[in-house]
Length: 436
Ligand SMILES: Cc1ncc(COP(=O)(O)O)c(C=O)c1O
Image 1 (cartoon, rainbow, N blue to C red):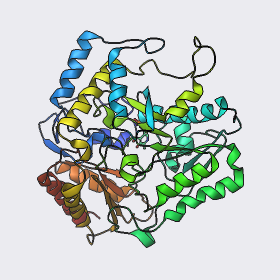
Image 2 (image 1 turned 30 degrees about the vertical axis):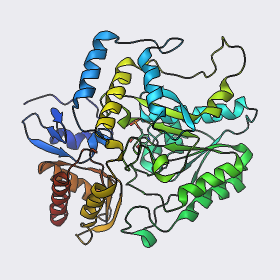
Image 3 (image 1 turned 180 degrees about the vertical axis):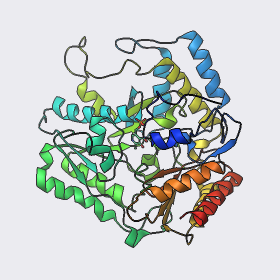
Image 4 (image 1 turned 90 degrees about the vertical axis):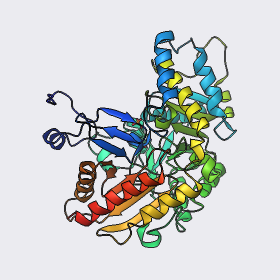
């Protein structure tokens, strides 16, 4: 197939490398993609941490088809449509009970912006308008919009874009190879990293801080799993100081860890929780913010004819997205997918990824639920190059993985079987043996 690749400026892509040697996907079903030439590629990353139920699932496909013919669009401002409300009720059955309100967005990035704005506005409506400061974490990823890159902590995503939001600070990240390398599940050491928040409180004063945002498991920076007790400690410190805690669950939401959410998995309930990706199985763009009832209720003041929260998107609660999400929840439920990534399957996955220990360049292996991270020693002066070579090698041999820096991330669809795990890890092992 010959196609002109010139006009499309691709996102988060080495455009020149890609266009010299394109990697195109034309079709997908279940655990697999197919290239335009018909070559089969096993999906080791659920698309981009989103296709949790696997590709082209019938209930989702049918829901979208039907919705497109029935109600293609409905304005979300001052209007509604039944599926938006039905979906919200279904969603809050899955969240921790306190998170009982849902605000819709169209992506993880928009969910993050929404949550940050809600946090600042919440303090204002309850008379603490001086609480405007936002605290993120080093190495955090919260999408690509200005709020998200300001609280985010990945330098390449920040350095090109000016001064970002004012009034943002960061706690330290939790990566500690010296003490925690090759941990299975939650690392033993590092609960005290949460105390770094106390340092920022001492510097800025709690009365100026609106919220802290973290990924319960950091994905894009290379799979960093929270040390035992860390999230609990963060929750305690926020409670002591009246600071809202936001969990960015864009990748951990919808079964990735073997529980519906990281909040349910770790038993720590944030005040706001952002999701996207798995909410529609990646089929139609959608995100959401879950909020505690008292946060929502604080806005429900003043004359009833007035808008309470001046925020929303043309495509909030888009009918196609709502239909896709309902089909997705049905599929998750029918196949008990939100808890599939625990127990024996997770054990098998853990054993498989940890079998890579000892192969050339492997300096750490991390895992939780159906997430695996394999960190490689970098080539001096060329960070990221080694992992990228592995990515290309695996692609040539029919397995899609993902890399960030020199960490390989695995996050397969939750329908994965043991034979797929063997293929992914076997292909990776061969690539590790070959790479320079
Ligand atoms: C934790 C987290 N937050 C936000 C985002 C951004 O989501 P989106 O790309 O849908 O804007 C991502 C994407 O990977 C993510 O992992």
